[in-house]
Image 1 (cartoon, one colour):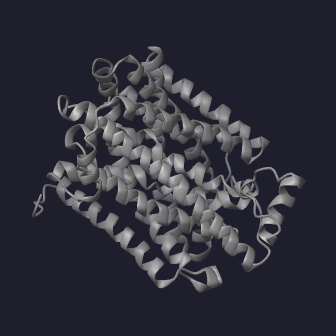
Image 2: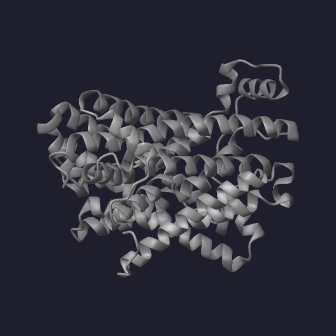
Length: 433
């Protein structure tokens, strides 16, 4: 069974409260909060260490000019996370399972292969981020930080046996830690707010290098494993007994997606703004997490640098937990295999250890991992658009034409950016860049 399906059932009291909301007998906000959780868990994928790496580069080198990319990526993410949640609620199946059932087997196996590559790239970013945070915060070797991060991640994952709510609360607490850290950073860094507003709403790209960073931001923001995971997380709460109840569940889910990903988007924008305010004017060469940490101390003080590391550590641990959950669900859905969590954790840790062992720059590895994710991203996006638009799968919940059109547009944008980046990589001149 999938991660969501393997969770403990709800208590009788909670089940009654949920039934009361769906039946219209209870309209209190406290009862509606019982439906919250899936989007919160999925949203940590949008605040992982890969975001730290790409956002630091974007802010330090290009100031506020790439904030519009963060905004666009977050809007695309909202749409696809909402579609993923709807798919799970309506079908009670996750995206990987439905892809296996409705697509030819060679296509499904290919999707699984791409997803596993994406899972390794994801884990590289998340695992390295937590290890870098530990290494700098406690002055320990990076390899030791990686081992500790792996142990902490596994310990949190074992809490899943107690049900989904404790795990959600832990992840939610770590998200709060990341968000509050950046609220503090924005209070002490000088921000040119008019320039930030302009950068948010006026698209600009300063050359081919800026395009690489922009594609990295997309890869770090819209995450393949989060699209798969969200469709499975919706299954662990309650099963709708009618289309009326499904409509209510979808509506609750959409509200949660908007709230959770708005918070994630604001945190990402705060990362770029902080890097721009702290580094762009005097230290535009800052492109590494370690350099950013060491540069923050003289620029903003030791407290700012320490809080930056706490945010990075919370981000790395929580996103690594979510990444492992998604990997389990993807393997189960496509292949029908369910391996022990520690085995899954160990296998996806290998690339990170290889990177460190060969002396590869950790932050560069983080950024390139996000570019890999951006290339893998169209696979679940295309599958999700196809499945949620099919009447035989979704019934009356199939996408309306305008929703399908927006989803197709979002997918085309990412495919186009990937194509441009590929041409750029092979030295093909691109007009305008």
